[in-house]
Image (tube, rainbow, N blue to C red; front, side, top):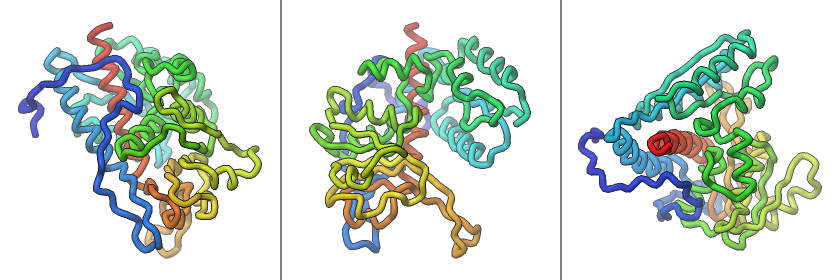
Length: 328
């Protein structure tokens, strides 16, 4: 439907929404076939499509005010996976009517070159979001470079100012896309979090730590344990949890004996593993073994689970930054 035909009856909220305030839905989820039980499929594609429907209305409202939401993506080097991810983000911008700028720099670019590109983008008033695609080449300080992004344009949500707000229990900064996408999926599926025990596998600043903060936030109210490479009895911790979120980058590490009956399992991992039965010689696998579907009540697929939601939340952060530029 062309944007010009959308009836604008939406009042834009520029203050952040607590994750539990998202509208809940009862998706027509399909189970994982071929396994005795029956975990319902936590369908990230379907959830992301609903997020995008709402964003179309908000984008149209921005354009009525003369604001064109605009995202810039900086990619350094020729990592194939990174280019695939960037392509997905650019296509999402095209679907939604968000302007996108794609800046490609050679792998042997200097850190100063990337720094100058970021600082230049910070100064562009009509640009609302900046993303530096990870990973950067080994000779660059990735964390230091992403810290240069203006916090109000930090649509990945990784700037210390935005993460610091999250530590304080504040939601008025940009939220990291993957963790906030997981929270949106839980709410969309009507999965209760209050009083539930949750285990987050992984403690990265990109997923694990912000995910634990969101789950434990006031209004969400889960009791959260973060497990990592030095944690003892990780399997036993998971087996006692109501919610398990795996974000460790180890293919199919979480097996059915780690999961109690009826637990909710979110698989953030996406790994390429050798598979001679496939024509291309490999397949994508998550951090969770497919057999977990025989124990879990809900399970997110890989691919098609968290990935689409990460991109949807990136688009939402970009739109939110554009909305806030109108009141800055």
